[in-house]
Image: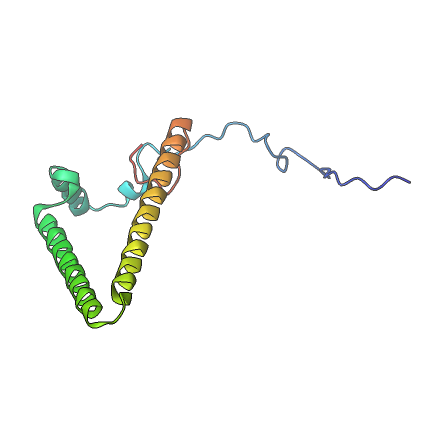
Length: 143
């Protein structure tokens, strides 16, 4: 006696329910020539977007100052942490404070490397989709 077949058979398939037979869908209205997010922008947002396009990477000089200031504060705190680890290392009998600091820095570098690789992978996937002609609703590019 033969075992029953596991093959999936379409029951009552019609033009409306069969996959792959949809034909060409015609879009009316926007037809993705202008991204939907751009359609929802106000005139002030559009003007701000045009103004920011004149700056390097689209970031205003005031914002560059804030970014540089925050990185300066971050690295100053990191330097203080290293100084504290060094002082604790000199006070301790073993070098456990510096080992802890080295482990924290290693974890930080590992996190940075992972973030860079994930970003690169996402960019490559987006470029491949764009090359294949696939447009997603999440893309912020104007078509």
